Image 1 (cartoon, rainbow, N blue to C red):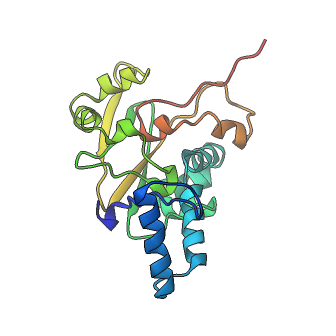
Image 2 (cartoon, rainbow, N blue to C red):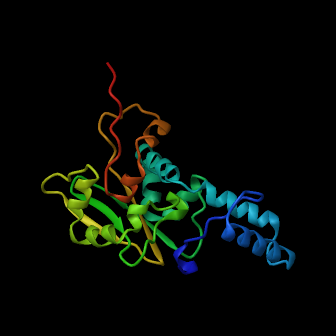
Length: 210
């Protein structure tokens, strides 16, 4: 993949056991550091940044949007700025757009050409997202795909499919589950799944007690 697709390779930790390619990567890294192309500290910072990216970042952003109308407006108008406000670095040439689920429209994300994904916010894409099966069927039969993930859009609800590209990534702002009044932002974030951020499903319902 090209750099524009934001698909960096895995990095083997210094000193970790590995096969031929892991040893080769470490040798190349040592050579580039020796030549002054970058420093060991820059490598460590990049590894730390890569490891910090996960769906939990998107979940925190969604939970904040559910709790705070001003933040919700920011998320929908400038996703990069909203991410930065939560301590998530989504800077760079790739643009991010958050699409909001409503009672009338449900959004689902796909990349038909390869596997472009909002890694800066959601981390690594799941294997199913990269599969040719999902990439073709999400466009042709999104309701059937969502049904296989356990979600059946209500009758009369429209489904909007958004095709990611090398220049543009999407994230879904799901509907807030019912019976969540009084829950903390942290508790709300725990209901937001990776699949609901992609749109193939919806957030979890809160556990019922009593």
